Length: 150
Image (cartoon, rainbow, N blue to C red):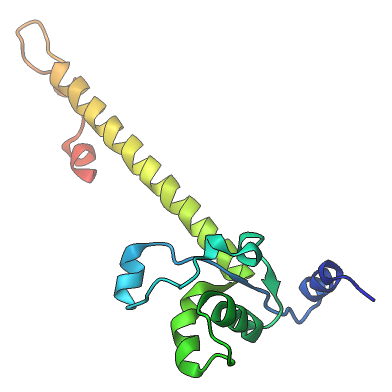
């Protein structure tokens, strides 16, 4: 009998990849308002299974866990319930993409901040470059195109 991790490794390494799902929290309040979602009766961080990032081989298993453990349902989830719960379930591939996207967004914010600081420094250097008669030398000026670019 194979363990769960061995079967997951086998499925991931096969040429026909099977999606593996995990229950993930909704990232922001704005997202919940936009899709008119409500908080779960039992929060995700209060569930031992969700805290350990349990993997589900089928999306229906993830729906069933959310419905029974977090919404208090005894019956299998209906299509209406699945529609509400789909925002909580994500495949591991998509989860990795979201983490990479967050890293890229942080990098872009850092680069924007650094570019702004460089432009401000360039403006200070341009404004401080004067000759003996208190006039700015054209060779010392930074092109206006560079300043306007940011």
